[in-house]
Image (cartoon, rainbow, N blue to C red; front, side, top):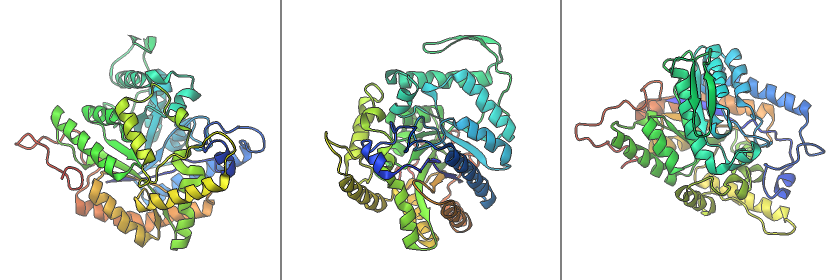
Amino acid sequence: MHIMTFSERPYFHVREDDIISNQNSYFGLANMGDTGFDPLKGHQLYHEYFDERLYAEELGFDGVMLNEHHQTPFCMGSVMDVEAAVLARITKRVKIVLLGNPLPVADPLRLAEELAMIDVISGGRLVPGWVRGAGSESIANNANPAFNRERFNEAHDFVVKAWTTPGPWRYEGEHYHYRFVNPWILPMQKPRPQIWIPGIVSPETVVWCAEHRYPYVALCTNIEPTIEMCNLYANTAERVGYQAGPENFGYLQTIAVAETEEKAQELGRGFVYGGGFGSFARPEWMFPPGYNSKAATQRLAKAMTDPRTGAEIIRFSEGEIDVAQVKASINTQYQNSQEQGLIIAGTPKSVIEKLRNLMETLRPGVLGLWYHHGPMSYQDRRTCLRLLGEEVLPAVREMAKELDLPGPFEQAPGIRPLPASGKHEPVVGVGA
């Protein structure tokens, strides 16, 4: 199993009341003035976040995961490849997992060069991962969301070709045009690095992943639709001629660990600060017209409005916002999220028991531990990492061996032959 750490690297010096007053959205908050970005605080946070990734390597984690969001304090990784380049130089062993670059708003030729440089600098430790990006990424980069999936597919094919086809050559596509393609820096990993794809239960993305034999990493999604997507992946893999295994699946779990249950609960609430992921952007910015298929929109609407999931987006009517009422709703959201297992908070002993249930149900070969969001001191974050590394990590490794959960670097994804029957074997909790 591949086990990695993750944080959005938030700029958490934003008052929760201001997020709520902005229609419960980080996206669209003013970047200047009393509530805006302070470069001195940003400087400190960047260095702390780099130190945490070095500490994760010291503790024995297999990877450090980064992501990218634009024009929002929710995530300071607006140019994730800059962070990855720094980590490529200062780390020695961990995989640098990028989940991921929003392809539809990128220049794919420049991206091919940037990622190749990171892979070479790191000595072949890059795991590129690509996303369509939320609708707000298209808005922030002046890209038409209606062409989001088209641009994603074309950019993906172009980057892979740029890494594997000798140049120079010319490219004339639907959305991208290059008269001269001959990137000099090519990845150290041959024929190319492994590619992992994260997602939030879009059926089209899952099918596309299985067809390309890429591992699919579910990002803190509810268990029921995640199981449906694992089944969809397995059925698609069968259709294209291979057996899907744990190496094809990953899951990102929010987790807060402390020396006492009370402290863990305090830290765990950071995951719903301002509304949590549901407050990343207002629905009209997150899912603008044309961005999602009808099937994906229906699935997301169900997940975001089901009170059992703890993932509901808090919406407001016209007029003055009752901040106290919204905060009460956020507290309820936190409790629901814990009941559904979307947030795990506790001492090492209690979280290990909950992780076992997750691993037995989903059988992931990749496990990401999202250990921090919202206001949390550097010391608390470091303590959380220490407890994860020293006490939780060894236990999870033993469980992975017991449950036979190979990661993508132990069992190459997409090459398991189908059984003699031609039918994929059900996986406990996924296909049973």
